[in-house]
Image 1 (cartoon, rainbow, N blue to C red):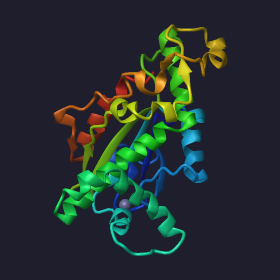
Image 2: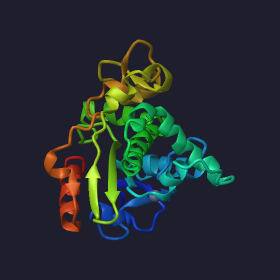
Image 3: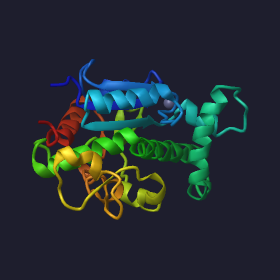
Length: 255
Ligand SMILES: [Zn+2]
């Protein structure tokens, strides 16, 4: 029904072709790009793209793909004022460093530390997408329709995937993200929608959400935790291999 099943958020860096990353031909994936593939809550551009992808295109998968040797991440690692508005943007990456300061400070090698910040930044942006109302709302809707069988899909969507790309080799690596663990302590802050423990009639969706003392869609849905991580698909270094692995990853969610 819709032309896109996947939405990819990537960096503006021209070395990172969005469709190439997932091994698809040009025009096959809905894309948004900015410096260091950030999801900033006050960025109406990015928020509008996410809303359109989720609500109108009804994408099943959201892929956040960062890349090593990212200029935005490198700039955020320098004690330099890059002037507004760029410095305001980079501040969001500095905040990611602050959240993971203990781990990053233990990495003595500057390049390795920078590479790890690229990965942590991707994971952080996945969580930022997951925290948006539009994604939480859609996951409640699809959770309910998956229970009553009306959607033909047994999972809540959209699913969110973290990838990092190595421009020098063309290798894409899937990052392990345990959303449930990451969000467990944040439930009381970020949960916007809840569903009752028993499946309900879709017409009662509005009444069902925000029901007190009910199952949390934000952390209880096991499909949130990405269980597709297998050693054989963590490193994907040519177009055909990427196409196959993404096809495998996505196939069970396609109608
Ligand atoms: Zn970049």
